[in-house]
Amino acid sequence: MTSLIRVPDGFDRDIRLLTSSMFTRRIVMGFLQVVRAIYFALLGYTNVEIGLLLSLATLVSAVHHISFGYLCDRYGRKPFLLVGTVFATLRMVVFALSTDFWMLALGQGLGAMGEGAGAGQPVVSGYITDKVGATQRPGIYSAMAITNGLAASIGSALGGLPVYLQDYGFNVVEAHQLLWWACAVGSALSIVFLLPISEPRRRTSHGGEIKKGGKIRNWGVILRFSLVRSTSGLGWGMAESLMTLYIFYKFGVGSDALGPIYSLSRFISIFSYLLIPRMVGRFGDINTIIGSRIAAAVLTTAFALSNAYPVAMAVFVINRIIVMFTMPIRQTFASGMVDPEETATAIGVSNFARMGVRSAAPTLAGYMFDAVSLSMPFFTGAALMAVNGVLYWMFFREKP
Image (cartoon, rainbow, N blue to C red; front, top):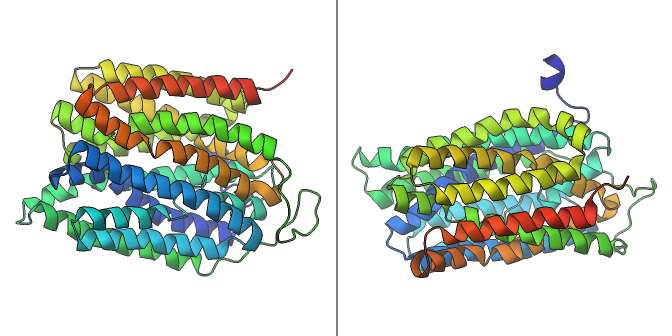
């Protein structure tokens, strides 16, 4: 047991500060995930308008990933960690000040330029690659997945606070705006943790100094990985972007009940990360990812077909655990598929592909809600997840 919970090698002062910064940001993101779409609906916006607000954030995030990834490979990691965290804080301030559609759109755009809420972000991955050797990275990514899972569990559990505040005399808008201010404070706290971290000394895979303006050599690998990630982005975006709104419409359940369910799924996923070394050792990293994608496709279909609320929620929790389980595996694979001096660019380009296509998902899902059926986005997303597993097998499966 001691070996399972010990601090991994390479978890030095800077990595601890970075993890603490991501922890506070992830609490805010966990709260947003549960509350945001339902809040927009309570303000009176249509499904298509809600989808547009979510799509805007995803599109801006795609631009942010490729630009920040490329720039931080050239000019260093820390400045972009700090700037991204400031943008994330500004989103919460805008939400707290206005309910106007265009102001909410501005807040979504600013927040999408945030950086540092997850280890899969290009700047964060680049920083970890610079600081930690290849053999130590799986432990670092798994440890961060655990801390981020715990933070997201806390944030999701707080999703019911707007409902409870209304019992104390606050109206819908006032209750949410009070909590947006609290989120702004929490996001600003994450900046404090970043200020003392040092810019790592960066080395190429051959041990030499990384020169600014170096050329990217592994475009073939980067583009194949980007194609693979684009299918998962659109697939998971179709299934996840309006999930809380779907449950709200179909089962009449609000954020007060959904918060604990989201929290439970993230909390259980923390323990699943302890199985990663055994699963990867037995099946390999790519085969583990492929298996999770196929399982997610099946469970997403089952969720859409479930008409009983308890059954639907059980399938939902299991599905989220399976999807979250492979995050550290994918992050470790992505950070090692190219040379260290190209890591942030590779992850930025692949994230751009993923987020670029995913930006269409909320709007498409909102249209399907109105014009086809509530279940259609989930069937579409399940098919794309299965395609994603096939592409991983085609491009990256382990050779004998």
